[in-house]
Length: 499
Image (spheres, rainbow, N blue to C red):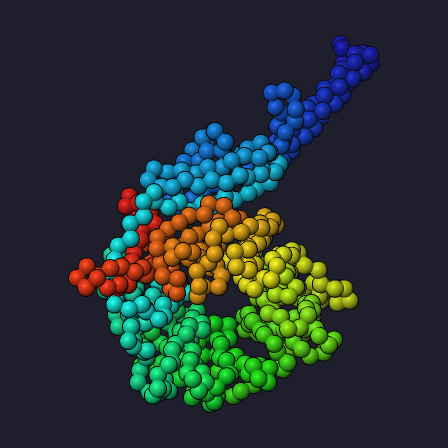
């Protein structure tokens, strides 16, 4: 009986242990292979090891054809696993202009290219309304639903368009009630947009007068409830500036540029409360955060950029005084980003979670996560989705992409038309501007510049909520009188089948 033979038993055990060992080697090898595959590694035809990356490709409109170099990869929206390297990504669809940019795929990385915006091959503006004179003021609500055009010959009456309607219905006339604005007998007064409230029903307007300015809260839903804020808050008409606190229509910051003092007030409890002194410029964020340039407790010839959160002050950095200070704050992916720049310094510094960092390391200088360098920079702005930052001086542009942690530096091909002084964010990915009386947009990285339609430079072109239609004002010729008129035009940014 073999099981009683010690030699046979030992031999069987050796075979069993060898089997366990080989099986363990196979499991280990399989695990290593799976791990390498999970991290995108592969083996080329020549035996060389390579690593894949993952890219997500989308577009507006959806269902566009994807090509990487000369290889077709189906239609958007999709994800593509591709070997690391440099490629040309192209997106095309029948009836539309193509989109293209060079991309660099890194091994084990995930990149998103879900923002391409394809324009129809042919854009066809349609006249919505015609006026003998150019409107002095065009304002659009934050949600892009309401478009208000100040009627020519009237300071207080607006044509209100609901851009959500298809087809676009005729406008409703709404007016700031009599007695709200101070009467200027000699004329020469005008209205200027300050801010929209987040409720998209209240808009803060500045009434510019020869004797000083006043502020009007215009309720577009119920115009009869509009207010003269200087009267409601007991603030003398003059040089004091009123802005919304946290973009809420009944809470305010009041800034006196002569005394450089900043106050808070509200309609619910009218009481002027001093917040800060020695303020050169400021920008508010949320309920209690203020980024401001201060001339107090700083060396001569310097200005300190500080962050006030409630009652706690944090020093961000200093700049030489006598400059224009570019400050702002936004939240993206649960992280706070603060930008601070100076025209004289020619740089905009980007900080991530500055308050948290200063609390953890109070004795160390705050280090930026990025620096945008634009000589004489005079404008800085977060994109609509706050994932990107723009720094600009005229045609000189630099953008920072937080998601990819990359900078892009380029120049616009032509100058921006006056009275515009800077480009604007069209959305989270594109910049829009008017040059040579034509509307252009360009991707944040300086690629895919597109010429759209003609537009008067003094009026900002706007889109509806889904970016399906563009609204512009363009000059036209009256065939009967041979005089110039001005047409509000609607241009579809999709072909008919995609609307």
